[in-house]
Amino acid sequence: MQNYKDLEKNIEKDFSSVSSLETLQEFRLSYLGKKGKISLLMKELSSLDADQRKENAEQLNILKGKILELIDTKDNELQELILNEKLETEKIDLTLNVESKQGTIHPITQVIDEVIEIFGDLDFFVAEGPEVETDYNNFTALNTSENHPARQMHDTFYVKTETDGMPNVLRTHTSPVQIRSMLEQQPPIRLIAPGKTFRCDNDQTHTPMFHQVEGLVIDEESNMSHLKGCLEIFLKSFFETSELKMRFRPSHFPFTEPSAEVDIAYTRKGNQLIIGDGKEWLEVLGCGMVHPNVLRNVDINPDQFQGYAFGMGIERLAMLKYGISDLRTFFDNDLRWNKHYGFQPLNTPSILRDLS
Ligand code: PHE
Image (tube, rainbow, N blue to C red; front, side, top):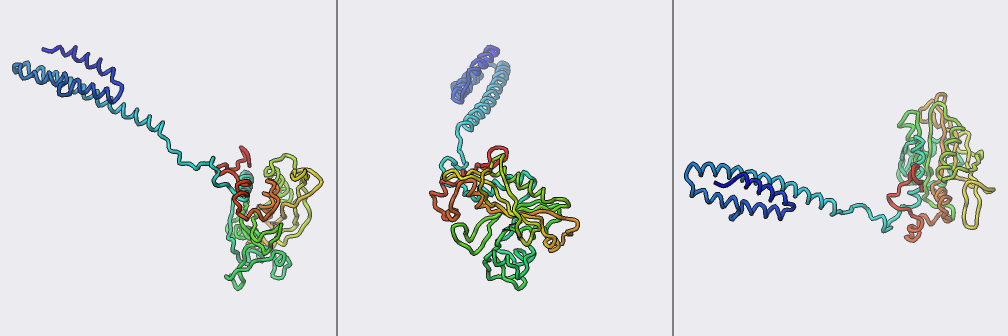
Protein backbone atom coordinates (compact mmCIF):
# COMPACT_ATOMS: atom_id res chain seq x y z
CA MET A 1 0.00 0.00 0.00
CA GLN A 2 1.12 3.49 -0.86
CA ASN A 3 2.60 5.55 1.97
CA TYR A 4 -0.05 8.26 2.10
CA LYS A 5 1.76 10.23 4.79
CA ASP A 6 4.73 10.68 2.42
CA LEU A 7 2.44 11.50 -0.47
CA GLU A 8 0.71 14.14 1.60
CA LYS A 9 4.07 15.65 2.55
CA ASN A 10 5.05 15.78 -1.14
CA ILE A 11 1.79 17.47 -2.00
CA GLU A 12 2.39 20.12 0.65
CA LYS A 13 5.95 20.62 -0.48
CA ASP A 14 4.99 21.00 -4.15
CA PHE A 15 2.14 23.30 -3.24
CA SER A 16 4.41 25.60 -1.25
CA SER A 17 6.30 26.54 -4.40
CA VAL A 18 3.14 27.55 -6.27
CA SER A 19 3.31 31.30 -6.87
CA SER A 20 1.34 32.00 -10.04
CA LEU A 21 -1.65 30.78 -12.01
CA GLU A 22 0.76 28.88 -14.29
CA THR A 23 2.53 27.01 -11.49
CA LEU A 24 -0.86 26.34 -9.89
CA GLN A 25 -1.98 24.70 -13.13
CA GLU A 26 1.22 22.63 -13.23
CA PHE A 27 0.59 21.56 -9.66
CA ARG A 28 -2.95 20.50 -10.52
CA LEU A 29 -1.84 18.48 -13.53
CA SER A 30 0.96 16.78 -11.65
CA TYR A 31 -1.58 15.27 -9.24
CA LEU A 32 -4.98 15.30 -10.88
CA GLY A 33 -4.15 15.37 -14.59
CA LYS A 34 -4.55 12.20 -16.68
CA LYS A 35 -1.04 11.21 -15.81
CA GLY A 36 -1.06 12.83 -12.43
CA LYS A 37 0.04 10.96 -9.34
CA ILE A 38 -3.40 10.64 -7.80
CA SER A 39 -5.02 9.65 -11.11
CA LEU A 40 -2.44 6.91 -11.65
CA LEU A 41 -2.93 5.58 -8.14
CA MET A 42 -6.68 5.55 -8.74
CA LYS A 43 -6.14 3.45 -11.82
CA GLU A 44 -4.11 0.97 -9.85
CA LEU A 45 -6.99 0.40 -7.45
CA SER A 46 -8.65 -2.06 -9.77
CA SER A 47 -5.81 -4.55 -9.29
CA LEU A 48 -6.36 -4.65 -5.55
CA ASP A 49 -8.72 -6.88 -3.64
CA ALA A 50 -11.98 -5.46 -2.38
CA ASP A 51 -10.92 -4.54 1.16
CA GLN A 52 -7.68 -2.93 0.15
CA ARG A 53 -9.37 -1.15 -2.74
CA LYS A 54 -11.86 0.40 -0.37
CA GLU A 55 -9.23 1.49 2.13
CA ASN A 56 -6.89 2.96 -0.52
CA ALA A 57 -9.75 4.62 -2.38
CA GLU A 58 -10.78 6.36 0.82
CA GLN A 59 -7.27 7.69 1.42
CA LEU A 60 -6.93 8.80 -2.19
CA ASN A 61 -10.26 10.62 -2.08
CA ILE A 62 -9.27 12.44 1.07
CA LEU A 63 -6.05 13.57 -0.60
CA LYS A 64 -7.86 14.52 -3.79
CA GLY A 65 -10.31 16.61 -1.75
CA LYS A 66 -7.46 18.31 0.02
CA ILE A 67 -5.69 19.10 -3.28
CA LEU A 68 -8.87 20.56 -4.76
CA GLU A 69 -9.35 22.72 -1.70
CA LEU A 70 -5.75 23.97 -1.84
CA ILE A 71 -6.12 24.79 -5.52
CA ASP A 72 -9.38 26.60 -4.96
CA THR A 73 -8.07 28.84 -2.17
CA LYS A 74 -4.85 29.57 -4.02
CA ASP A 75 -6.75 30.36 -7.19
CA ASN A 76 -8.91 32.94 -5.39
CA GLU A 77 -5.87 34.43 -3.74
CA LEU A 78 -3.98 34.78 -7.00
CA GLN A 79 -6.97 36.20 -8.90
CA GLU A 80 -7.38 38.87 -6.25
CA LEU A 81 -3.72 39.73 -6.38
CA ILE A 82 -3.87 40.13 -10.14
CA LEU A 83 -6.96 42.31 -9.90
CA ASN A 84 -5.38 44.56 -7.30
CA GLU A 85 -2.29 44.90 -9.39
CA LYS A 86 -4.45 45.92 -12.36
CA LEU A 87 -6.35 48.43 -10.26
CA GLU A 88 -3.06 49.89 -9.09
CA THR A 89 -1.48 50.22 -12.49
CA GLU A 90 -4.32 50.74 -14.94
CA LYS A 91 -5.58 54.23 -14.22
CA ILE A 92 -7.89 56.32 -16.35
CA ASP A 93 -7.90 59.97 -15.32
CA LEU A 94 -11.38 61.21 -16.04
CA THR A 95 -10.80 64.65 -14.58
CA LEU A 96 -10.42 67.79 -16.63
CA ASN A 97 -6.98 68.33 -18.05
CA VAL A 98 -6.17 71.54 -16.21
CA GLU A 99 -2.71 71.69 -17.73
CA SER A 100 -4.00 72.15 -21.25
CA LYS A 101 -5.39 75.64 -20.47
CA GLN A 102 -8.10 75.03 -23.07
CA GLY A 103 -10.61 77.09 -21.18
CA THR A 104 -10.19 79.63 -18.43
CA ILE A 105 -12.43 81.18 -15.81
CA HIS A 106 -13.48 84.69 -16.81
CA PRO A 107 -12.29 87.41 -14.39
CA ILE A 108 -15.93 88.34 -13.67
CA THR A 109 -16.69 84.78 -12.56
CA GLN A 110 -13.46 84.69 -10.59
CA VAL A 111 -14.26 87.94 -8.77
CA ILE A 112 -17.83 86.81 -8.00
CA ASP A 113 -16.40 83.58 -6.56
CA GLU A 114 -13.92 85.54 -4.48
CA VAL A 115 -16.64 87.89 -3.19
CA ILE A 116 -18.88 84.94 -2.27
CA GLU A 117 -15.97 83.24 -0.52
CA ILE A 118 -15.25 86.30 1.65
CA PHE A 119 -18.86 87.09 2.53
CA GLY A 120 -19.57 83.41 3.04
CA ASP A 121 -16.95 83.48 5.76
CA LEU A 122 -18.78 86.46 7.30
CA ASP A 123 -22.01 84.41 7.51
CA PHE A 124 -23.75 85.93 4.48
CA PHE A 125 -25.75 83.67 2.23
CA VAL A 126 -26.19 84.07 -1.51
CA ALA A 127 -29.55 85.19 -2.90
CA GLU A 128 -30.62 85.56 -6.51
CA GLY A 129 -33.29 87.35 -8.47
CA PRO A 130 -34.39 87.53 -12.10
CA GLU A 131 -32.80 89.85 -14.66
CA VAL A 132 -36.20 90.92 -15.97
CA GLU A 133 -37.78 92.72 -13.03
CA THR A 134 -41.00 94.49 -12.28
CA ASP A 135 -40.86 98.26 -12.19
CA TYR A 136 -42.17 97.96 -8.65
CA ASN A 137 -39.28 95.82 -7.36
CA ASN A 138 -36.62 97.73 -9.27
CA PHE A 139 -37.83 101.21 -8.29
CA THR A 140 -41.06 101.76 -6.37
CA ALA A 141 -40.50 99.34 -3.51
CA LEU A 142 -37.01 100.79 -3.21
CA ASN A 143 -38.51 104.17 -2.39
CA THR A 144 -37.99 105.48 -5.91
CA SER A 145 -41.35 107.01 -6.85
CA GLU A 146 -42.54 107.38 -10.43
CA ASN A 147 -41.17 110.86 -10.96
CA HIS A 148 -38.02 110.36 -8.93
CA PRO A 149 -34.96 111.69 -10.81
CA ALA A 150 -33.07 108.45 -10.03
CA ARG A 151 -35.23 106.70 -12.57
CA GLN A 152 -33.75 108.83 -15.33
CA MET A 153 -30.26 108.40 -13.93
CA HIS A 154 -30.54 104.69 -14.41
CA ASP A 155 -31.20 104.81 -18.20
CA THR A 156 -33.55 101.90 -17.95
CA PHE A 157 -34.16 99.27 -20.63
CA TYR A 158 -37.88 98.50 -20.78
CA VAL A 159 -39.21 95.19 -22.11
CA LYS A 160 -42.52 94.32 -23.72
CA THR A 161 -44.06 92.38 -20.84
CA GLU A 162 -45.83 94.20 -18.02
CA THR A 163 -46.76 93.70 -14.40
CA ASP A 164 -49.72 95.59 -12.88
CA GLY A 165 -49.94 97.84 -15.93
CA MET A 166 -46.28 98.87 -15.78
CA PRO A 167 -43.71 97.67 -18.32
CA ASN A 168 -41.11 95.32 -16.86
CA VAL A 169 -37.47 96.36 -16.92
CA LEU A 170 -34.06 94.78 -17.23
CA ARG A 171 -33.00 95.35 -13.64
CA THR A 172 -30.81 98.44 -13.39
CA HIS A 173 -29.16 97.25 -10.19
CA THR A 174 -29.18 94.18 -7.91
CA SER A 175 -31.14 96.07 -5.21
CA PRO A 176 -34.52 94.50 -6.19
CA VAL A 177 -33.13 91.26 -4.74
CA GLN A 178 -33.35 93.07 -1.37
CA ILE A 179 -37.11 93.42 -1.87
CA ARG A 180 -37.62 89.83 -3.01
CA SER A 181 -35.58 88.44 -0.13
CA MET A 182 -37.29 90.55 2.54
CA LEU A 183 -40.70 89.45 1.23
CA GLU A 184 -39.61 85.83 1.42
CA GLN A 185 -37.80 85.85 4.71
CA GLN A 186 -38.13 87.40 8.14
CA PRO A 187 -35.16 89.14 9.80
CA PRO A 188 -32.43 88.46 10.75
CA ILE A 189 -31.28 88.63 7.12
CA ARG A 190 -27.69 88.57 5.95
CA LEU A 191 -27.32 88.16 2.23
CA ILE A 192 -25.33 89.04 -0.83
CA ALA A 193 -26.76 88.93 -4.34
CA PRO A 194 -24.33 88.90 -7.24
CA GLY A 195 -25.65 89.14 -10.77
CA LYS A 196 -26.10 90.89 -14.10
CA THR A 197 -27.50 94.39 -14.32
CA PHE A 198 -28.41 96.57 -17.32
CA ARG A 199 -28.36 100.24 -18.22
CA CYS A 200 -28.70 101.89 -21.60
CA ASP A 201 -25.18 103.27 -21.65
CA ASN A 202 -22.12 102.43 -23.73
CA ASP A 203 -18.75 104.16 -23.61
CA GLN A 204 -15.26 103.51 -22.28
CA THR A 205 -16.45 103.27 -18.70
CA HIS A 206 -19.96 101.87 -19.26
CA THR A 207 -21.31 98.74 -20.91
CA PRO A 208 -25.06 98.08 -21.33
CA MET A 209 -24.67 94.91 -19.28
CA PHE A 210 -22.48 94.80 -16.20
CA HIS A 211 -22.37 93.01 -12.86
CA GLN A 212 -23.08 94.07 -9.32
CA VAL A 213 -23.09 92.43 -5.96
CA GLU A 214 -25.69 93.58 -3.48
CA GLY A 215 -25.36 93.20 0.27
CA LEU A 216 -28.18 93.38 2.82
CA VAL A 217 -28.19 92.98 6.59
CA ILE A 218 -31.40 93.38 8.57
CA ASP A 219 -31.70 92.72 12.28
CA GLU A 220 -32.49 94.68 15.44
CA GLU A 221 -29.20 96.46 15.98
CA SER A 222 -26.93 96.66 12.92
CA ASN A 223 -25.79 100.24 12.41
CA MET A 224 -23.44 102.36 10.33
CA SER A 225 -20.36 101.21 12.25
CA HIS A 226 -21.18 97.57 11.49
CA LEU A 227 -21.50 98.55 7.84
CA LYS A 228 -18.10 100.24 7.94
CA GLY A 229 -16.47 97.28 9.68
CA CYS A 230 -18.01 94.79 7.30
CA LEU A 231 -16.88 96.70 4.21
CA GLU A 232 -13.41 97.22 5.63
CA ILE A 233 -12.99 93.48 6.25
CA PHE A 234 -14.33 92.75 2.79
CA LEU A 235 -12.13 95.23 0.93
CA LYS A 236 -8.97 94.23 2.81
CA SER A 237 -9.63 90.55 2.14
CA PHE A 238 -10.52 91.16 -1.47
CA PHE A 239 -7.45 93.27 -2.26
CA GLU A 240 -5.36 90.92 -0.09
CA THR A 241 -3.80 93.76 1.89
CA SER A 242 -3.75 94.60 5.59
CA GLU A 243 -3.32 98.30 4.87
CA LEU A 244 -6.24 99.89 3.11
CA LYS A 245 -7.20 103.51 3.41
CA MET A 246 -10.90 104.06 2.76
CA ARG A 247 -13.13 107.11 2.76
CA PHE A 248 -16.89 107.31 3.27
CA ARG A 249 -18.38 110.22 1.32
CA PRO A 250 -21.97 111.35 1.97
CA SER A 251 -24.14 110.49 -1.00
CA HIS A 252 -27.74 109.87 -1.92
CA PHE A 253 -29.74 106.77 -2.81
CA PRO A 254 -33.53 106.73 -2.43
CA PHE A 255 -33.42 103.36 -0.63
CA THR A 256 -30.83 104.22 2.04
CA GLU A 257 -30.62 106.98 4.64
CA PRO A 258 -27.98 108.02 5.42
CA SER A 259 -26.16 107.03 2.25
CA ALA A 260 -22.49 106.98 1.41
CA GLU A 261 -20.09 106.17 -1.36
CA VAL A 262 -16.85 104.46 -0.50
CA ASP A 263 -13.50 105.34 -2.03
CA ILE A 264 -10.24 103.51 -1.56
CA ALA A 265 -6.79 105.10 -1.77
CA TYR A 266 -4.32 104.17 -4.46
CA THR A 267 -1.05 105.20 -6.09
CA ARG A 268 -0.17 105.00 -9.75
CA LYS A 269 3.25 103.54 -10.45
CA GLY A 270 3.86 103.65 -14.17
CA ASN A 271 1.08 101.53 -15.60
CA GLN A 272 0.35 99.87 -12.30
CA LEU A 273 -2.17 100.74 -9.62
CA ILE A 274 -1.05 100.11 -6.06
CA ILE A 275 -4.24 99.68 -4.04
CA GLY A 276 -4.46 100.66 -0.38
CA ASP A 277 -2.41 103.80 0.06
CA GLY A 278 -1.67 107.02 -1.73
CA LYS A 279 -3.11 110.41 -2.55
CA GLU A 280 -5.64 109.38 -5.18
CA TRP A 281 -9.11 107.99 -4.47
CA LEU A 282 -11.27 105.52 -6.40
CA GLU A 283 -14.96 105.00 -5.83
CA VAL A 284 -15.78 101.32 -5.35
CA LEU A 285 -19.28 101.09 -3.92
CA GLY A 286 -22.49 102.69 -2.69
CA CYS A 287 -24.05 101.91 0.67
CA GLY A 288 -26.17 103.13 3.54
CA MET A 289 -28.73 102.31 6.22
CA VAL A 290 -31.87 100.77 4.71
CA HIS A 291 -34.56 103.48 4.43
CA PRO A 292 -37.55 102.91 6.77
CA ASN A 293 -39.87 103.27 3.76
CA VAL A 294 -38.22 100.26 2.12
CA LEU A 295 -38.81 98.20 5.26
CA ARG A 296 -42.45 99.35 5.37
CA ASN A 297 -42.90 98.31 1.72
CA VAL A 298 -42.02 94.72 2.63
CA ASP A 299 -44.00 94.71 5.88
CA ILE A 300 -41.01 94.83 8.19
CA ASN A 301 -41.53 97.12 11.17
CA PRO A 302 -38.86 99.88 11.02
CA ASP A 303 -39.31 100.58 14.74
CA GLN A 304 -38.10 97.09 15.51
CA PHE A 305 -35.74 96.28 12.64
CA GLN A 306 -32.96 98.16 10.91
CA GLY A 307 -29.93 97.37 8.82
CA TYR A 308 -27.58 98.29 6.05
CA ALA A 309 -27.19 97.66 2.36
CA PHE A 310 -24.41 98.07 -0.15
CA GLY A 311 -23.90 97.58 -3.85
CA MET A 312 -20.70 97.36 -5.80
CA GLY A 313 -19.63 96.94 -9.39
CA ILE A 314 -17.90 93.65 -10.08
CA GLU A 315 -16.11 94.94 -13.19
CA ARG A 316 -14.68 97.83 -11.19
CA LEU A 317 -13.34 95.43 -8.56
CA ALA A 318 -11.89 93.14 -11.23
CA MET A 319 -10.22 96.02 -13.10
CA LEU A 320 -8.58 97.31 -9.94
CA LYS A 321 -7.42 93.98 -8.64
CA TYR A 322 -6.24 92.48 -11.90
CA GLY A 323 -5.02 95.60 -13.68
CA ILE A 324 -7.52 95.51 -16.56
CA SER A 325 -7.76 98.99 -18.02
CA ASP A 326 -10.65 98.89 -20.51
CA LEU A 327 -14.10 97.85 -19.34
CA ARG A 328 -15.33 96.88 -22.79
CA THR A 329 -12.66 94.19 -23.22
CA PHE A 330 -14.50 92.11 -20.62
CA PHE A 331 -17.21 91.33 -23.13
CA ASP A 332 -15.30 91.21 -26.43
CA ASN A 333 -14.73 87.47 -26.05
CA ASP A 334 -11.28 87.78 -27.52
CA LEU A 335 -9.67 84.39 -26.84
CA ARG A 336 -6.24 85.96 -26.34
CA TRP A 337 -7.67 88.29 -23.69
CA ASN A 338 -9.54 85.42 -22.05
CA LYS A 339 -6.36 83.36 -21.90
CA HIS A 340 -4.31 86.22 -20.54
CA TYR A 341 -6.72 87.41 -17.85
CA GLY A 342 -8.53 84.13 -17.26
CA PHE A 343 -8.05 81.87 -14.26
CA GLN A 344 -7.32 78.18 -13.99
CA PRO A 345 -10.45 76.07 -13.65
CA LEU A 346 -10.72 74.06 -10.41
CA ASN A 347 -8.56 76.65 -8.68
CA THR A 348 -11.46 77.90 -6.60
CA PRO A 349 -10.78 80.91 -4.41
CA SER A 350 -10.37 80.10 -0.74
CA ILE A 351 -9.81 82.27 2.29
CA LEU A 352 -7.70 79.53 3.82
CA ARG A 353 -5.37 79.21 0.87
CA ASP A 354 -5.07 81.98 -1.69
CA LEU A 355 -7.98 84.05 -2.80
CA SER A 356 -6.64 84.53 -6.30
N1 PHE B 1 -28.08 100.11 -6.15
C1 PHE B 1 -27.07 101.15 -6.05
C2 PHE B 1 -26.48 101.39 -7.44
O1 PHE B 1 -26.73 100.64 -8.33
C3 PHE B 1 -25.97 100.75 -5.10
C4 PHE B 1 -26.45 100.63 -3.69
C5 PHE B 1 -26.91 99.43 -3.19
C6 PHE B 1 -26.42 101.72 -2.84
C7 PHE B 1 -27.34 99.33 -1.88
C8 PHE B 1 -26.83 101.64 -1.55
C9 PHE B 1 -27.29 100.43 -1.07
O2 PHE B 1 -25.76 102.35 -7.65
